Image 1 (cartoon, one colour):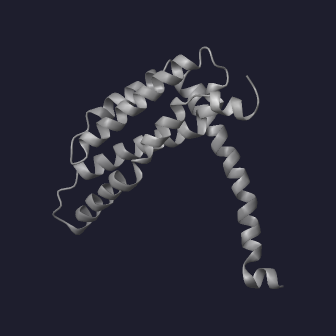
Image 2 (tube, rainbow, N blue to C red):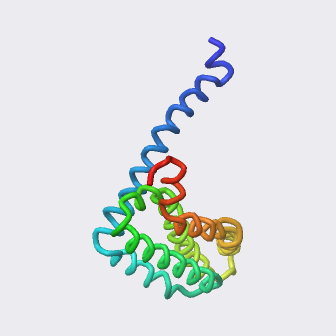
Length: 161
């Protein structure tokens, strides 16, 4: 009786499902790198980044910076994975997060670019885009650094060569 009354049952369910979500994220991350990025040599991602690069609006320069960041990371992964079998798995989750940040930056830039600021909804959309670019998107820089460290730090930690 007390479990339902005090919410502990919900906490137990939440803890169990988070393990499933974490596994799913890892699978999706590996799929993004191996089946989406590497399979076509990065051409589909390059096509998207070409579209994102041309976005206009209040955060266009910041978006272009992040597009260039993702292009550098893509080149690193495409080149490095040829000789390092561990690279994809080592950086997959960080890559998924970085790619997501850039995609959402593009979406917020589109929303901000279409906003005139004349209505309350437009002002709120511009404020939300500003928040995203100021507070969330800067995480991309640290993700790039982690990804560019490659698989060596992980292999060393695990005692592998």
